[in-house]
Length: 296
Ligand code: ADP
Ligand code: MG
Image (cartoon, rainbow, N blue to C red; front, side, top):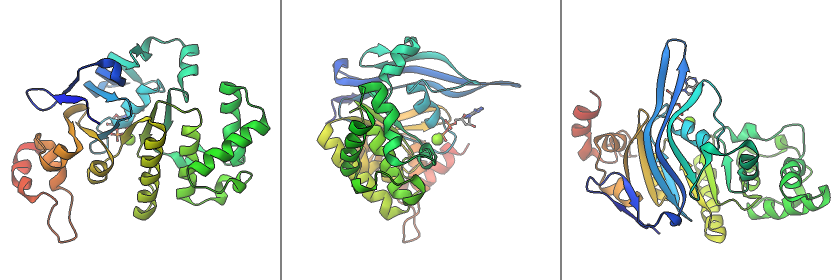
């Protein structure tokens, strides 16, 4: 899967042929302009996602993951301000696109499953209707055609298509999340940005949904930007992982290396903070080193 090599520092990646990338983020800088000055939420972040790859962005709460996800979809609102860098989607800089270009790209090229996916369904309309506007606008489908397509999509994510006329509150949290994923799949996007897609769910449901997403990825070949603060979960699911710390990407490597051979002291610290059922940390050998280096 990986066409990527690490550089001499083993940190940043470089891809031999950029046409193999669906997404290239280059030196991205994002500030929040606040009354008492600017806050650098994302500082010179660069990473690539290859076609068909699952790329993870890890790091503790507040390190800038969602800010990047929103920037990729050009959904950032003031006071957020992109102060530098490029976001290339199949080689085209999305930051320079017109609103019309962007509108045709959203859902079709890139779709997004938000952190607050539970709230991204409209509570007062049926499941069928949640698909209708998008399928009409992008593909000109009438309500009947749209319901037919929605039924196919629900089946894909493991929901009984007979429930098309039910309302969001009639489903469990896990099922609602599957519906949101079905909406994200509707226009066969090349990249799906998933920001903490299963964080609010219990572990069993979380696993079921991730397995489903993994299978769909095999079937349709889309790439995923998968964001979570749960590094352990991430190494099971992703091909490569970027670890963020206070707005900067401190390490990018294969999931295998992030798990077994983390290079950056912050990645090591993240591992040492994860307890095991036996009361010890997952990688206790890093605990001491990490404590002295990173907490300063
Ligand atoms: P993450 O998703 O990794 O938890 P975010 O991208 O949401 O982090 O936030 C990164 C930083 O930007 C945080 O320190 C947060 O407080 C700050 N931030 C996010 N949104 C705003 C906003 N609207 N105004 C000011 N600061 C913000
Ligand atoms: Mg977030």
